[in-house]
Length: 279
Image 1 (tube, rainbow, N blue to C red):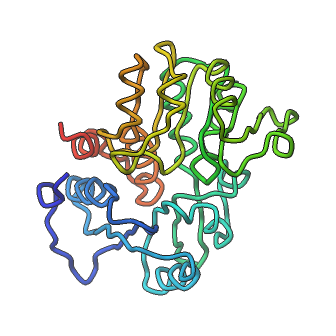
Image 2 (cartoon, one colour; image 1 turned 90 degrees about the vertical axis):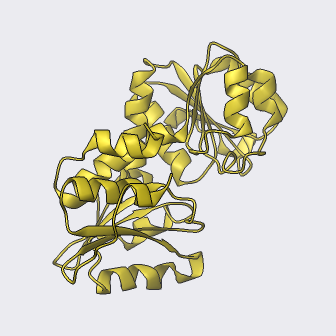
């Protein structure tokens, strides 16, 4: 999407500044639709991306706070780490210990939310109420997806390269954690109504997971947190007959909620949708 089609860059001395931090962050579509929303709402505000490496995270947050930045979105790989910098975590960020939306309050406190989780829940509810779901991944996005599935009443399978069948399975919590291998993919996909990719796989067009091609079937919903619509993973899911939601839907859901939280105004959802989807 072309940012220049949606915003102008007239910034005054009184402009409110909002930001997104991550590593990488150059790919982010958030500045385009946030700035378009500011212009539509006639807000004197600007939203800018900052690449922040893990080693500089503490200094970056202190700097944003010191500079009077009003609010900040957080993307990978910092969603879990930034929770520790928040003075108040709103549900479900408090239980997930993962944050993608931060507010720098006038009294110096930092509040944190997880609009990935609540946005994902709204997407899941649009598919019906799945009996079981598979989450691929182990980071902050995966934690959000697991929370959303559990909130919808589904059993949860989690497959990640960091998981071990024997050590990580937790039946008491309703989560069955499995190692990343063909046998576990076959089992979990057969049991699940919805498959959620919460890994970085898919950002690059040629990323591929052979197990998806082999075991995805037309009766499944496939949700990808990545919003590169031409990825091979999405192509595989579509070719296998799945109902597909790419990450642009989640980007919109979490963005609408975050806009309201950080500005105190209703989000112009139609403007944001047109900016994200180009229509």
